[in-house]
Amino acid sequence: MDNLEYLFAANIFVWGGIFYYLFRIKRYQQSLQNDLDLIKEAVKKGSQDE
Amino acid sequence: MSDEKQENSSILTWLTVIAFLLAMVAIFVYVPTEQTEGAVQRIMYFHIPAAWLAFFAFFVVFLCSILFLWKKEREWDIYALASAEIGVIFCSLVLITGPIWARPIWGAWWVWDARLTSTLILWLIYVSYLMLRYQTDMGSMRARFAAVLGIVGFLDIPFIHFSVLWWRTFHPPPKMISSEGLGAGMDPSMVSTLLLSLGAFTLLYFVLMGQRIKVEMMRDEVERLKKDHLYSN
Image 1 (tube, rainbow over the protein chains, first blue to last red):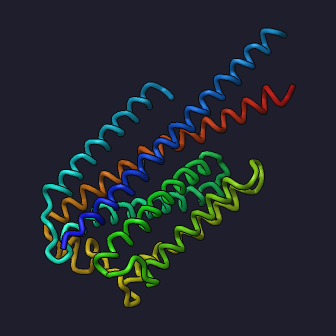
Image 2 (cartoon, helix red, strand yellow):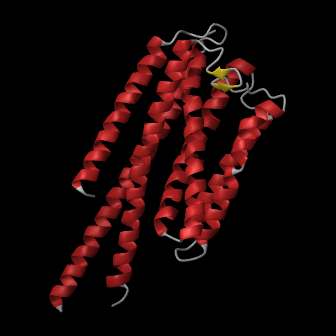
């Protein structure tokens, strides 16, 4: 009575869930960093034009 | 982020990785197979730490929500939001790994007993909390409403803990913390493996919190810059 497939499935969900969440946070961080860089560049350009 | 903070975050990440590697060796190599349930019982070393992490995360939401309502400082709101998101992720893992473990042991994926139902209610409360955060506009009463929900939601946790003692349930009573003592009736190798896994999951909570708080602070910075420089022209 080992039911290894259930143990395997539980592991897939736990690790899949943790890595998916980490990946989503990192992707969001990257997108915000791009936004920050763009805004800072626009602000810099704006102040140079003035 | 300052260099010192970056270094601390890196040390914490590596400690978490090492703790998980040790926990995996303990779970799959060191700890003996349980006699009646077989290998599937090893799900316990993920299921209980995920539940502990979810409860701990919701406790942090509870504390930070009280502090936010009291001090009205945005940082407490950020901590509460970050912790609620992590809590929901791990509460989801509890609700997934539980039925996977239950199916071969109880012969059913799900039963509507007090422990399982109250855990599902907890998950629904904090999913509502996140929906309230994501679906309403910035600058509204959102943070205050969410804080109240974060506090009220936590009241379900003592109910979940005592449900297996107050009612006859399919879900077994706590083995790790019982009136007979810490880990009484469990093999010492099982207790040490469970404690190792609990430690690894707790470290993971702090790694995820650090990353999630960073994201929220960056979002605030983007909003502030847009408001000050782009929308004002």
